[in-house]
Image (tube, rainbow, N blue to C red; front, side, top):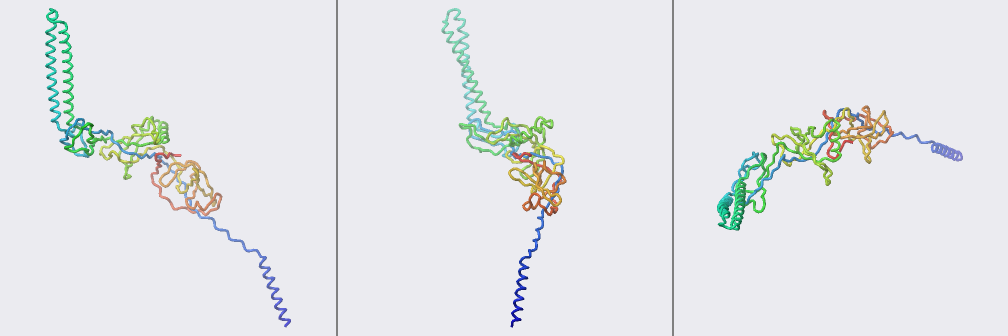
Amino acid sequence: MNCVSERVKTAAIALSVVAAATACKEPPPATPPPPPEVLVADVIKRDVPVYLELVGQTIGYQDVEIRARVEGYLTNMAFQEGTVVRKGDLLYEIDRQPLEATLAQARADQATAEARLAKANNDVARYKPLVAKQAVSQRELDDALALQDAARSQVDAAKAAVEKARLDLGYTRITAPISGLVGATLVKTGNLVGRGESTLLTTISQIDPALFRVGVTEADYLLVRRRGIESGKQASGQAEIQLTLADSSVYGHTGKVTVVDRAVDPTTGTLGIQIQFPNPDLLLRPGQYGRARLLLDNKPGALLVQQRAVQELQNLYSVAVVSGDKVAFKNVKVGPRVDSLWVIEEGLTASDKVVVEGLQRIQDGMTVSAKAAPPTPVPAKTEAVTTAGETTR
């Protein structure tokens, strides 16, 4: 019995020693996590032309309002709306009969005034020798001379009334003052026009050439102006300008700046510029919207990175660059955007590899596992475009 107790006691002591030894032993070290995986891409180097893109609207080279200058009923509309008319073509006719009667009355009044003037001339011619012989008084001659002057003035007034009546009668035939595209008529045959006001009938627009009007910010205007002077041009009107239409097609003719407004509009902060485009096919109509592109600069050997590689914080731009297995953030100076790319003006070299995916998982100086990103298709002809208000940095 005593032997059994001794054995149990000895086993318990052995178990206690083993447990104590196990408790004092340190746990094995944890395996460190693998470095974060990022996708990197090479910096692209190529020549990049930089364009300024301006949104605007077409207007006619001349927009002439056709108005009724005399009162009367419209008797004829001699054109087809929306077609091209030539200078001198008949557009409208107004009832002539009331104005013909007015002209006849004015001519009759003129004849009456001329008859009175003839009588006054005869009286003066008769009185002058009689006054010398004292057969009539000087007063009678003076009265005859006064009547002669009054009759002469009445003849002049009658002639003016005849001329006005003749002009008014001519205004009953309304012809095209210019060649161009005529719009929709605002009045129809039978309407009374010209009562108390010069009624607007229609509008003719000369659209060959066509004008494209845009607003340019002060910064963009100064940029264009200074670069034009640097290249030996005295005005930006020397440069050819492309026009992109609403369907994204490029218009077949280039334009040039013809007019720059005198002053900046204080309400919008922009300067109005007028660009002239040939329009032989009459494709451009007043009121169309489009985008004009003006070449600002040519950047030879520009460095470009994917836009998703650039981080912005409080107007500061940075790019993560991988060298070996270490990552470093570099501050950069960015230029214009080019499709899905961004021009980097300062801060990178052509041999750098930039992180394009995984930026959220890395910090400056961290060890990373870099893999090549899938290639991004780049257009063969790389063009940088800045819109109005967004200048190259």
